[in-house]
Length: 147
Image (cartoon, rainbow, N blue to C red; front, side, top):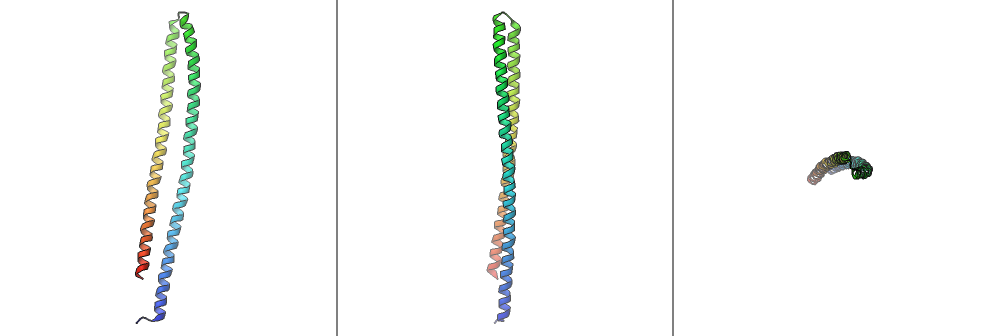
């Protein structure tokens, strides 16, 4: 038969170990939450930058289209007067606008792809951290059950 004092000491030790494990897990969860909050802020900032870039690109495209329309109209007037040069000018201007639009589109697509990639990486890191915490919590429960 076990000494009652020794039994209480064992129970006290097991309780202290369980509380220590719980504190460690709590700090780990807190750390993951802080990292998540920082990640969310970064993602919000990036999304804001992408939206700002998209708005700027749209504004630039609208200005370019307005200029192109004015130049095409001018070219039509010159063409009516019999100028072949105006038609060439209109074609060149259209080609420049299409090149600008393609470049802006590629730039925005690249930014969105980077945003998606960063988001997927953070999501994977979070899953791994949460799985590690679940495993640790399971281990603490198992250890406490045997004492």
